[in-house]
Image (cartoon, rainbow over all chains, first blue to last red; front, side, top):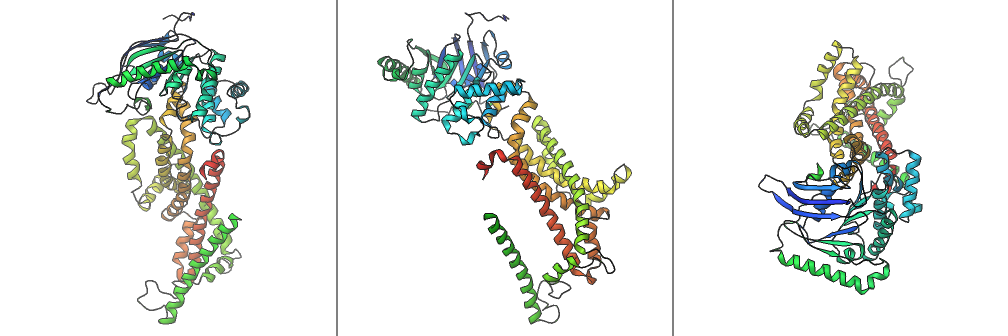
Length: 282
Length: 282
């Protein structure tokens, strides 16, 4: 149990992780079977794969929102549970999940409230975060007065309000239109670079993974395993990159890996177990 | 403008109902002997069905020969007495109902075990229960009016418990996961997420409970023999029906208006509490 965090310590270390839903019953379903993955501090890692590959489940295991069946996960050298209790990570989901009875600022301040921050400190931080996500005049609005893209920016501001070192995102831009999505991707990169945040990012989108990530982890389904890891060459992630040949090369590499994964699926059978309606709801 | 047209519509329907009453009387008395033909379900003489204007006029006449107090003032005084019993009953019922909802939320065992008992509680006729409550009350420190409040509470806790539990369970799994990711305690989750989300379920229950509290108080007064409230007034006027039938009708109108008044109060409270999301709800 090391308590010090040195530079070489991984942000997330996943060793031999197994997750079985309904273990011991007739309907036992192995969602993840033996995943090893180490994520360095400051890295941006995407998880991509077909439905049922357990990418959302893996994210929730890192977040300690689901219990592990086997293996171990450490977050900054601590157990996943300690990571959750110590608020080492922030989280953003596909639905912004803002509380509609709270103003935008009050939504961003929610985690700070739970951590016992003073009102003045909360106000200062939410104003700062609103500045960061480019919504400075929207603090007093209610979520339903905002567009989908704006709501998602507020959710990111909320996830990062207490400056966690790790950001876990589950298809955060999945419900946005293409232009808004690209715009949000640019902003996300600027924000996490600014705050030096490690990101684990679940996505369905090949261009999204290719554009955002340092590494793209391609998962295969039933049971979820790592098929391959695509290294994205270091380069400036600007809007121009999207039209650059390097970007297409990376996207092609991911696409081919996904094709290889699809080829191994015998049939498009049972749907992905939904972790957010399963044990996580308890 | 919309408000005015709504009031006009309500008044129009009220007048139409009065017209039906008077029309029925008119037909019955024009074709039959005194009291109308025997095949009519209700006799149409002035004793059985006083004229609507006689009922209205009774309000401004003295409540009793030789007394200066008008019936309206007398009924207002009685309604105030009943309202206080009902208010205490509502408060007890709301607290008990919400408490039960929280207990059922907390314990899956009690969620399963309590619900049938709560349902059965409402199948016991209030009239049968009231004398028991009053008798028990007399053996303790409870006054008879407090016992009446308990009878009212017996009716009001039910909708609050049932809707309250549904409301506490209403947040989507992602919101519950979010609170868990913040390592929020059970109580923090209740205060910051579940209770605010339950408001949309609780206020309709409060509106129902408010009118039920008046019903419970009146029934309680009648069976407990408590003097001073509308229940006793209805009993007295029913006993002296032949000497002034319009007084009983007036008392019934007063009871209805009292129910309407508490409903209006609950509606007002709902609007205040839901102000933040008024646009979404309309």
